[in-house]
Length: 169
Image (cartoon, rainbow, N blue to C red; front, side, top):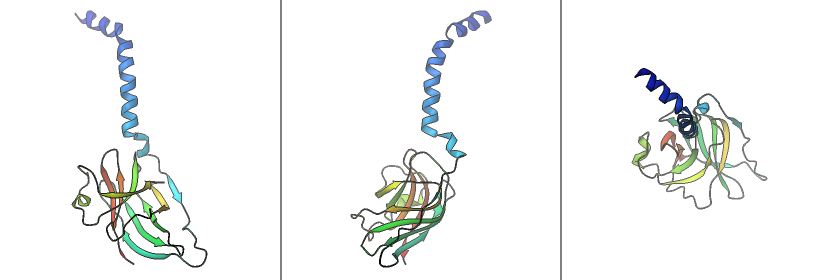
C-alpha cells in the first residue's frame, strides 16, 4: 500500500506543480512578504512659493495602529491658494497598496485597527515611501472643515497603519 501511495504522488507531481505554483504566486502577490524587509526612503523638499512661505493651516502627530507609525502631518496653503499635505520625520512599515487619506476626525472607525466596510475619506495618493519627508497635493474639493484626520491606510487588508488628528496651527 505504501508503494501505491508513492507511485500515485510521483505520477501526479505535474498536477501538483501546475496547481501549486499559481497558488504560491497568488499568495506572494497578495501579501508581498519582501516588503517586510525593504524600506522605501523619500526625501522631498517642501514646495516653494514664489512670493512667500507657505502658510501652515493644520498639524498633528501620527500615531500607529496596526503598524508602528510616527511623524508629523501638516497641511499648508501656498500663496496661489493650492493646499498640500506634508509628512515630515515620517516612518511606518512598508506594505502592499498603502494610501494616504483625509478622513473625518470624529469617525469611530479610526480608533480601530481594521476597518469593516468603507472609510469615508478623500484619497491623496499612494504612499510614496515608508520613510522620509513627502508631499501630497490636496484636491480642490477637499473640505478641511469636514476631513481633519490624516490616515495611512492599507486598502488590500483594510488596515489603518497610522492616524493623525489635525488641529489648527
